[in-house]
Image 1: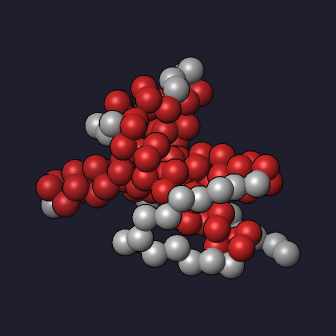
Image 2: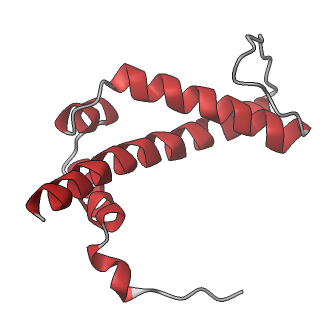
Length: 112
């Protein structure tokens, strides 16, 4: 499988946000500090990421689609716990990037 690098995306708000979030992390900031820098509460980001990760783990490992409106106690096996941590990390990153990109879009809209 091959993929294409698209240089036209270099100035897209999401790409700019990725570079900023990566830069904050590269300078030794932890998740809480990165969230604070972009105007989010770390505990909110972590909660949302965990919930999305739980749903993803259940779907990918068990084929079960959890409903957003039902409260369920979930027991995970060791493999699912590892998956959970990986998904949580990815979702936290995505939430921060999306939030920051929204700021860039709003600034562009205000400027025009």
